[in-house]
Image (cartoon, rainbow, N blue to C red; front, side, top):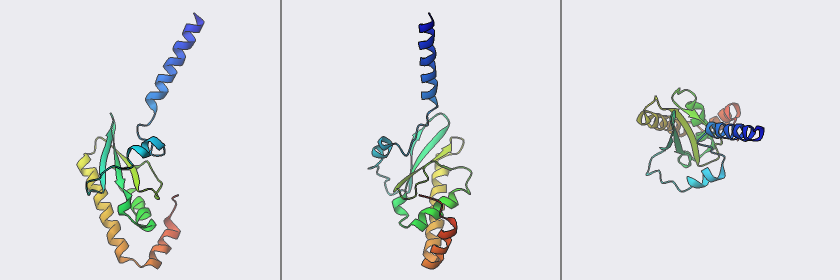
Length: 142
C-alpha cells in the first residue's frame, strides 16, 4: 500500500512540474530549430504561440543589423509595460518576447514596429562614435 501511495505521489509531482514549465524556451535547441526557417512575410514580429495567459512573439532581429541597433531596441522595450523580453541574447537573429493576453496582439505587434522605427531613426542620425560611447554605458547583453 505504501508503494502505491509513493508512486501516486511521484506521478502527481511529475504532472505538477510539467504543467509549470514555460511553453517557450528560446535556449532549447528544438525551439530554435522549429523557428529557424520561419517566414516573417516581410514583418518584423509575428505571434508564434498562445497559451491560457500569454501570447509569445518572435522578432526578426536580422532587420536590426548592428549591435547598437539590437541593444538600443532592448533598452527601449523596457519602457513598454505590454511586452516582456524572454530571450536576452542580442546576437541571435530571432528573439522572443511575451505579452499578457489582456493586451491585443495587434497592439503589441504595433509596439514592436514603433520601437524598431525609433531605433532606425536614432541609428541613422547618430555617429559611429556616439553609438560606441552609448554602448559602453548601456550594453549588458551577451
